[in-house]
Length: 119
Ligand SMILES: [Zn+2]
Image 1 (cartoon, rainbow, N blue to C red):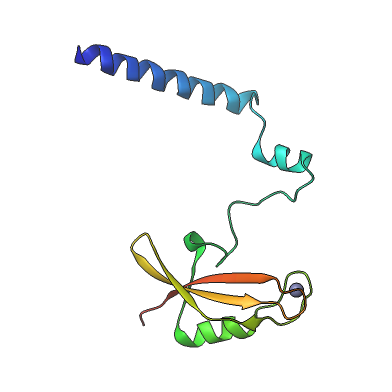
Image 2 (tube, rainbow, N blue to C red):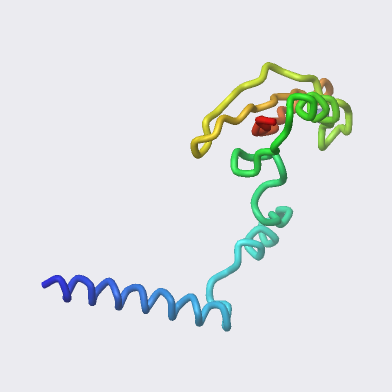
């Protein structure tokens, strides 16, 4: 009984691995980048830039956080951003500070995720 279940799981894993192996040599599935280019979007380079998401939070001391806060610019208007109230979030067991900014010209919002350095 147990061997029937394990055998089935083994066959499924082997099939998936074989499929991935074949797809790597002969592209069967459309790649994410191709789909984005087809839709006229900018290709997304691996994930998010530094500080754009909890997973890419910037490690910074209090002083560096203040420096980060001062150098934020709107990606569209290139003007210095206004600082808004900070926020915080727990991500994978670590406490992250979210620096929030608004653009005085286009009212665009921007968030920078920061992990406070303990030293
Ligand atoms: Zn703007």
